Image (cartoon, rainbow, N blue to C red; front, top):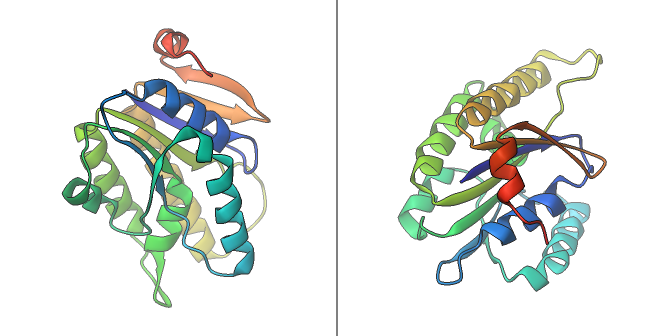
Length: 185
């Protein structure tokens, strides 16, 4: 099952994604939390520690991967259940790498995500919905936003369930009947 979740920042996406992943978890298979946020400062480190503490009770094995998500195939059992949080951070890591800007990083991220999710048994993917405001941005930021929208479209098309989270409210855009089968804890 492929579940793709998008929504505004700090709207409850991660906690809902954790609950969905937990319901998809199989007792005899691995249960992975793929954390993509690369900490840049103390605030980021504190946020990561808080997230780890918040999900301790779910018994995820946390894997930090900031780039080259395709490498999951080489190191982990893809028959397990995965939560990838988040595409937004993954794209930023790939696009803004070592003081250089890789304009077409979104293509690499979307290709790698599609490749691995086709091989995964269960995966819940979180992305931020950051392209709906009317602020004028510089060209680099516009390219990042367009790239994230591109990845969202590609992954949404290839998902079984597509959810939008708005202040902890779940809006099902695709896969309503499959989503009804998921019993959120």
